[in-house]
Figure 1 (cartoon, rainbow, N blue to C red):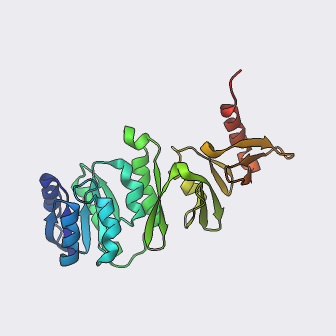
Figure 2 (tube, rainbow, N blue to C red; figure 1 turned 135 degrees about the horizontal axis):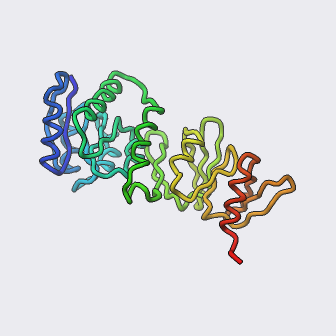
Figure 3 (cartoon, one colour; figure 1 turned 90 degrees about the vertical axis):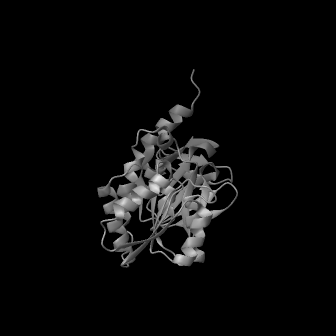
Length: 261
């Protein structure tokens, strides 16, 4: 039996989830909560297996609550929200799914199926999560089309939120990405370069080689090399060289940055 806690500050939204779960024979609804602080206490006392969790709530937001649950028995989380722009952060805290309101019974059923697999011990499918995220990247909404301001990255059992404008560049090292920041901080995350490039498609980052993704806001100098590529100088003195495959993209950037005559 899957023990469920429904957390949303809107009574009608809680009732909607409750009604959709009514016909699920293996689901037991332990209770409901209307704010993040109360939900935190209920998680501690009731020990649910699964949370249906709203993002924007009083007390603690859904994301803030999810980051505090290492203090208790950690339930699986299905976020339910009207805001598409938090999807990346949601999966950064190991959410099972992200339901955008208004959702129907079929969509909830799909999310519940993923929760059953996770509770049975299945490892999260990276390709599946990427497919879900792509659903939100193309939404015709001003908030979703804007560039993200922060990047959620795993650091052991914690989640770090890096300010994108502070990141100078990222370098791939095998199956990991090494993230460099203006303040000298570094982070290593397990993610492929092409997936990160897609995540940052609306931000000021450009791929200059197979292993380098650069924040164009922090390029101090560009100059051609003897082989037809380009060397980039960054604020901390790093010098990065573009690759042949990305030569045309770099030239296009150079053309954009040059003052018009």
